[in-house]
Length: 266
Image (cartoon, rainbow, N blue to C red):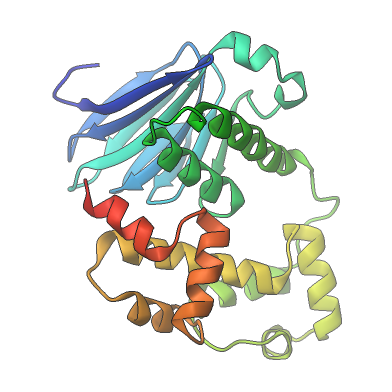
């Protein structure tokens, strides 16, 4: 790949794993190509598009794409440089984890959620040079692939229209003081039916899903704005900064202040 299209900012190698922080030039395009190893790509800052098997996926901060070895894909990048983390898994590492073989075939796209949060923790660990970082990264990789493997479980029936409407309502009003009764009333079903069907199809509760949306939004605000932590906590819908900070650390492994400092150091 030409040096003017991608620059490697940092690279570290653990046992059969290579973690590379990359910077892609703005308004650039990489034509269809393959990688000889399976890879996990996390977008840290910037935006772009990735084309896989005719499908186009948005690269935005926090999203993760898992690709198997030899998967053909192409990339386009927006007006600001896209910074990301690429984790390359050598064959001998993949062979030690045969129970994850299916998720490392083809490709998987995770715009947010646990896979994204764990990938971000792996990125932060890749910047720590103490003697236990490799062990922590290995453990986080197994946790990430475990969560990713859940995406292979097929929902037995198609999600009803009202359930998609409920999900869209959560995305559109994630920072409002929503409750289960209000969401159920908006889509015309009983709250208990909403709770059970939502958990069945999305494998999480309505409240956990809403909290994830708030935390993902807060991560972007901490990276891209100068708003105070208390302002971000309030705007995201948390009732106080302490509560927000506690949940943020559970979600990412870092406090909001630690996360912001790591971004400011770039």
